Length: 152
Image (cartoon, rainbow, N blue to C red):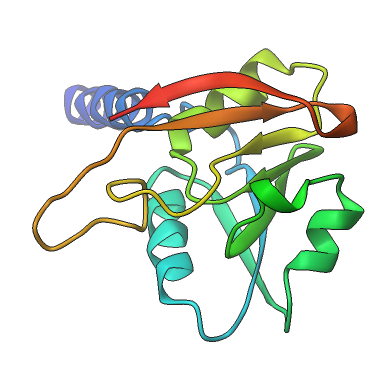
């Protein structure tokens, strides 16, 4: 019995590390996602986040833009949804591994953003499997950015 539990523990740890989830945290990391009721791709991103082990609270709003402005997100970095996690703002279709890295490294920043809706990003998968290169940007105070991660 103990050997089976050890195998399950190792399997769970492996999955968490590969997915970018907070590895076997005592409790899942809470993420609040603000989105409009009509957005389908947001549901896809939320599914990725849940699979990675995050505890998602969805908040339906009429317009995400005011929240972005309140968190210091420039219009050109806005997206169809915005989330908050660990004191950071997370904008767009960001891979869960990038969020895990943000929370692990704790940079002095407002958060991270993936501008636009790039094909192949979490929640933006295409039936044909199209993937376009994109960057996750670290959002600094005053609207400045720098590349946090590259994908595709």
